[in-house]
Amino acid sequence: MQAILFFLVFVNSIFAYNILIYSPAFATSHMNFMAHLADALTEAGHNVTFLVPISDEKLRDRIKVQTKYLMNVEQDKIQKMNTALGMDEMMQSLWTFVDSPRKNRKQFKLFENQTIETCANLLRNTEVYEKLKNSGFDVAITEPLSICGLAYFKMLGIDKTIIATSCSMYDHIMQLIGEPDHPSYVPAMQSSSTDKMNLYERYLNYQHGNSFVETMQEVFDLEIKLFSKYGIANWHDFFSETSLNFVNSNPYIDFPRPIIQKTIAIGGISVNVEKIKSQKLSEEWNNILDKRSQNMLISFGSIAKSMDMPIEWRTNILKVIETFPNVTFIWKYESDELKWANDIENVVFSKWTPQTTLLGDKRVTAFLTHGGLGSTNELAYLGKPAIMIPIFADQMRNANMLERHNGAIKLSKFDLANFELVEKSINNILNDEKYSKNAEKLANLLSKQPMKPKETVIKYVEFVSEFGPFPTMDPYSRNMSKIQIYMLDIYFIMFSSYSILFSVVVFFVRFLYNNLNVIITFNKNKID
Ligand SMILES: *[C@@H]1O[C@H](CO)[C@@H](O)[C@H](O)[C@H]1NC(C)=O
Ligand SMILES: *[C@@H]1O[C@H](CO)[C@@H](O)[C@H](O)[C@H]1NC(C)=O
Image (cartoon, rainbow, N blue to C red; front, side):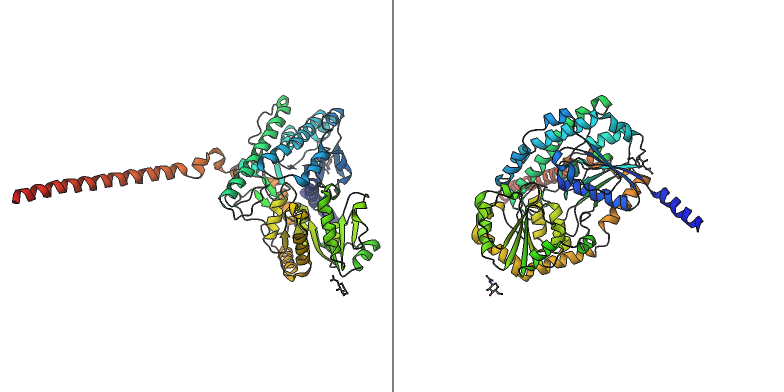
């Protein structure tokens, strides 16, 4: 018996890897995704250190991760001073922001500043560095929206690294790791097109992809300067040196696209269906749901706040709500200032909602959401029909992606001013069975997919810890120009040689024809 116990402990310690996850606190959705990776690995028995440079002070309390080793990198005076401005105004402006490649880029400036200041602060913190330097990490994971994590891993001497994208894809990563890039039918991360595009849409989609690539390159160029005194001067190979590229995409939900073998889809890792279904609602929520025969949840997430929505849109939604007296609407709303809402009976405003538990409850009929990828995946896995009203960033793409499965209706945020359209959409999503049937069908498929995202993460991270990195998996296309990759030079040469050949033939035929004429005329003359 003791021998068996000893054996078990021993086996466990052999397979437990030391894992570092770098996850700056700059947006809840990104942080949650990394925390779910961490939790999957912790549950599998690995020793996970979750390193969180605090980009946004307000997010410190939202970090939820199971590991014993949560290590915050607090802001020093310099970071506080240099990042004080602008975030709240930026978030308010998102509601009426008209999306375009150029404007997206401008909007990114604040993020750029925040990223660089966060990285500079991490480098000033020698205490954290000294602690991590001797921890003997087998593998390290970071999100590729910054090069800070990867450069820091180099300083710590960790050569087995993984990048994890909390969106379905990042345009710059596709290019930097040598993935085929086809803007003709693969919607860019911030594009509002589906995979079926007309000529102009293809042009816009190309611009969306390009402008994101340029923005990120600008951030990386600025960040890398912070590392020059540590002898790290060039970031261009950082991403291709990593062993894996996890993406928060599910092949059965996402738009199809060609990928390289290092790209592993783990979409759905953040949705723990069994856990959600086993959660119990409080009595207060139970009473709310029991009050009317149908319930609809309204939430626009945590970045663009409902309370900042233009008042005309808010009152319009309220007018629509009034026409459904038999439906309770639960609206995630951040303020107590509700005079504009005129005591309408069938709406419950709440600063916080148990969103996943509500979505897992049969009494909730549908969801009205901004379509953040977190909520989009929850909808897909829990099989709820939804109205999706994207506001910015990748939300357009998420809405288009889910709409293709016919369990969701997509509206533009500007449609929120349109009474007839909002009323019709809510009526359809609540009462047309087509939507709930299709949503359930997708959820059923996802519950039976051959590889579960959690298993995938654990197996691949263990594999990299043992065998990574994999330089032979780096596609040679990275050293080639687009002309070579797309064979444009070959097509040109082929086209030119055929053209020359054709011209020569035409020339000879004409020559012969002309001379034949001469000969015929000559002969005719002789006979005459
Ligand atoms: C787990 O990681 C921490 C670093 O955060 C380290 O101090 C500790 O020794 C590690 N534990 C084991 C068993 O390797
Ligand atoms: C609400 O439900 C009641 C009772 O079931 C029904 O008589 C009424 O027509 C319903 N109202 C609407 C607007 O559907």
